[in-house]
Image 1 (cartoon, rainbow, N blue to C red):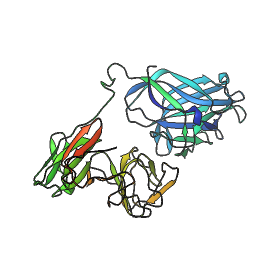
Image 2 (image 1 turned 90 degrees about the vertical axis):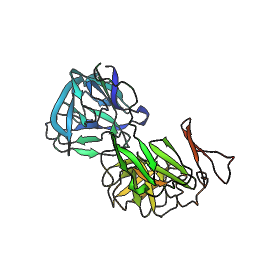
Image 3 (image 1 turned 135 degrees about the vertical axis):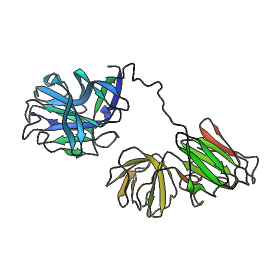
Image 4 (image 1 turned 60 degrees about the vertical axis):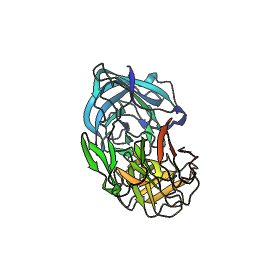
Length: 375
């Protein structure tokens, strides 16, 4: 049991759980489940679940199953049991209960699985409770429960059960490094910008055509999965990492950098990186890293909470747009040049470098002795 393959466990946030008792194929039993993914292909040796008991629940069964559109599927990849009467905890946050598989199951990287917990016997007074957290903190799966013994799963997209998946990469499949990344070539010339859309193939970013002035001083630097361009009075960002969302009415509370936004219809989630407007109830374009397979769709209401615990809510005016994108290089939320909440940009730059993880600019004709650094 050498590594953690997936986990969400926070005892301090543990809430009263959903109960489990009775066999999974029973007509009036309670069953709980939690989706998860492993980022690497590996052998799953054990799963730990945070829980507590009521009475004498008897034997607990935990399975690894596939996930289909309705929730946990019918394919059982692995199964094991645990003596539920040996659990000590009788209330939240419970304790970690370790289910070890006699025959490990190989998880395929990026594939959605779920663990399913049920109690062979038990009753409404002899059961276990799977501890939960009342928010969607774990991005690679959601919680499920069912009072019909697995016949009709209820999705719990705003809750998570607490668990840890243990396993072993094996010598052959262990990653050579803890970091993985891709590098692409970006070239600028003759008023055009080209990027490596696939290995060895350059494609023009047509939105950048005639934006860059070849007769002016030009500097570009790569940082944060973007390219920053200083072309004297032309300051641009080419963004390869983020998706783009658009709204005609941002609402009263603009999101802050790093806030998590969720699509009300699609269930898509995005971590905010940059927005073009801080003004209430105005048009805004938002850029961020989507962390779900689902994509944002036009017309849905996107919600979140800002750094001051204010509710963020706005409707999308278009489907999300994948990168690369090109947009004006401004301070956060300052596309119109009137905001100073996050500092101010110079009008002119012609020198750039990356220094200790921060973009540094100089060569301002108006103040040639000054240099500027991103936060």
